[in-house]
Image (tube, rainbow, N blue to C red; front, side, top):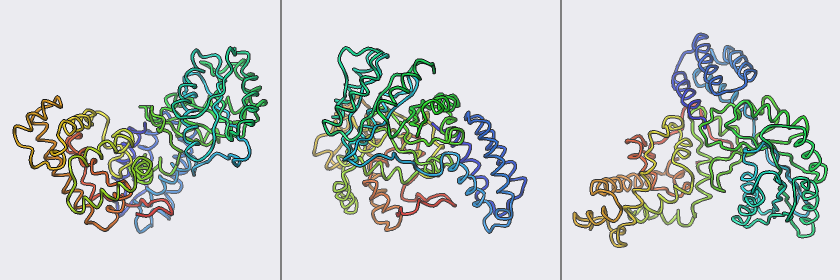
Length: 480
């Protein structure tokens, strides 16, 4: 989502962070660039003015101009201002204990992604040990009830629905679902409501009545990130009528400019709780203002990268893999396993944006999206013996593998060379007892990442030399 904004901010950070001396002119020029970048990202004008004025005021003070490292001090001010703009700190649901019922009411316009967000939220809460119940109260959109039923079945969460219910029955269905949940021991009720193409009196009246019937502990707006500043106006309208407690921002992985995310908290005062980062059920993350600010400034998001890896990689297997690398026993089968692990973590673009120094520097166009698939196909066309020992793969075997994978002998040769390079990189990493080795251990020893370089024309750096940018420190409590 924030690629263009990240690119601009990264350039500003690089140009000023290394300066041993900084002048008021440097500050004014940088802030002007920031202002234009924010306006192009469709950030609310009032938010931009506040950001610019407060940044100039603080940056021109003695604290920066007379600092030992003024460049880094200025970058720190920009970082802090972006974090404040996004909401200061992560906001959690205030759900009751497991012995008491908590109701989450989801609101939003049609097409914002409420039903999809409902099942993603249910899946997340279920993983956290809660017993969620989905409630189908969108009785206007065709097939909405059926869609929620299918999604609920997919994640093993029951869906409360009433056969033959019409649009006029939404309040009754919502009220009955609470009794059903209480009788059957469900501690979290997620109510999916109907939306319209635009805000109208009829929709608001229905939502007000549903809210009275279910008495939610959380009243959450589901907003489409692609609507930009319109999402702010929509949030204000819903808040005035229903009293929002927070926002779920969907389609955060889209090519939207970022105006919604950067304006919502400042204008409405309501925190962004979660963001939808893809089409899969797992593509649903808590919103961390500090981490998003780091991504915008091109500093990456190592903490989220580690968390993603921990969710998708078996830690015992990761430890075994690390030992194999240390003994130089990394095989093509291992590389295939790691390529598949990387796929589970999300798109290549998302992963690269979390790596310090690469955020905003690699566009979608630079990534050969078919590269991983070709690599997988080539390795899958090999026999078990060939995967275990690549040295036996001579010319005739390479021809057979190329034919079986629908590729060319040149591509097979390229993969084998890349594999040798990856082996060396991984061996080097395991010998390094410093920060990078520990990080790779936490990332599940993702040897497959070494294969991404060719997909970007050699643009992937050697992870063994990866360092955090100057002036950036990890959140308190996180250690490499």
